[in-house]
Length: 119
Image 1: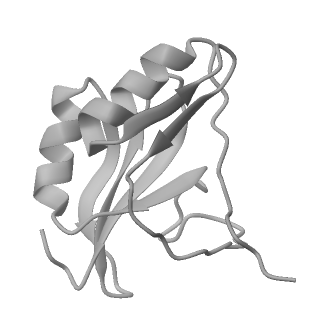
Image 2: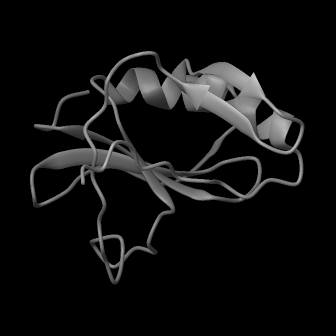
């Protein structure tokens, strides 16, 4: 048996508003809208990871998802332009990454990070 995909599901009262936020902030494309669920994709292969954690690091709350980017400053601009609320950072963490947390329009806590203190 091989795991082929792990998909986070974000709860949303207004799923199109939430989908539009992630499309505007991070460039996702909506591949399917079934009315009760929207599939957002980037169109390229992704690593499969599953993390178990008791907190988000540095004493922060545990985010529901993490999004790794190659340019954190650009991601911050995209999130702000899309109406996201940055609630932590940007900050260089002692374990070697730079990140910020945002609250999306549905209130989900999201970790946006860049390895190697880039961005």
